[in-house]
Length: 122
Image (cartoon, rainbow, N blue to C red; front, top):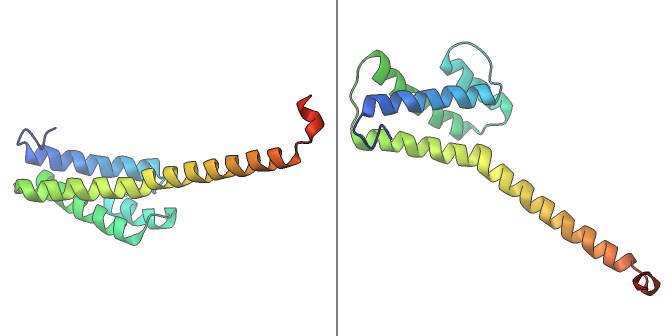
């Protein structure tokens, strides 16, 4: 909401904090945020997502440490990068797992129906 209130430096700081949390949740090491983001590669995070996270890190660092004011479009772009990356890391795998589970349930139900004998209904 900071972004929508025009507090763009605060929004950039929050996006950087979101990166810290993603790294922590994924078990991506210690050290600087740069090293943590790089460690995400070993946790199965695609290279392009890691690159996006570095872009967001730059925005957050420059906002916090150098008091750089970014244009609203630049902050919105980083927000979109993070949303896309979170979708790829968390949402898509959960969706694929749900689809696999549904397919397995259909196969199991089909097998159970095939193995059912007429006498079982009595």
